[in-house]
Image (cartoon, rainbow, N blue to C red; front, side, top):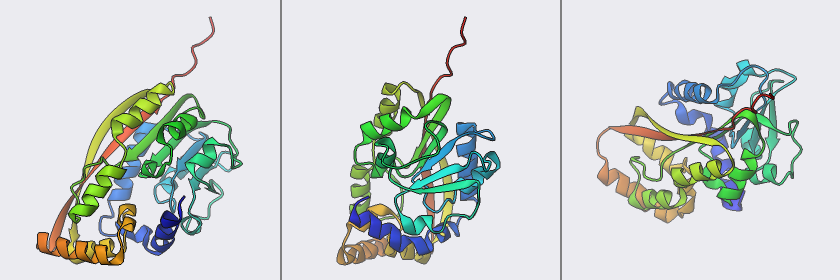
Length: 257
């Protein structure tokens, strides 16, 4: 993780879990969509890469055991410090690239389920990293990537929307990488509507809650916030989170004749 992102997530750690206070239904909504696609079972070897504080991973605890803990992998030490204290969870400070290059010791050589939620845009080498992770998937395993599409409808200033569109990987490119790694791959979209107080939203932007906002200087961000205030004047703002779910599945080995 580069220095800019390290500083971004270190500053964000204190408010990370509170980001969803205005939409408390969202974590359970998202967790159910993750579970339904990964089809995890108790004892499965599960890795959540880019886990943050474990907000969604902790909802997979019913499928973990002390012998097969769920791995929460993230390069940010301040975020991992907020990880739940539970023997069924195993935090690992590392990047996805560290996992692929085997620069970090993991308890499993292969996984039954890999989850990457809103972190794939941080990969420094998208194709090789996805290929390397896919090769760690056991027969019958599933690899789920949850992301925002490049074009989002958030009430942000235009420069932030433009920068986000440039930095966010194309879902089709992600799917192609998984297919080239031998996975059967599907792409689906789902939406989660929400309403947020305008001033709360502006505070979140001021806190640079999205990593793309860390690209802007204090002066640029201040001008962007003024643009938001001029463009969005209603006291309540309507958000429509549109997520793409890219699922790769490695077929189980054919039975011997």
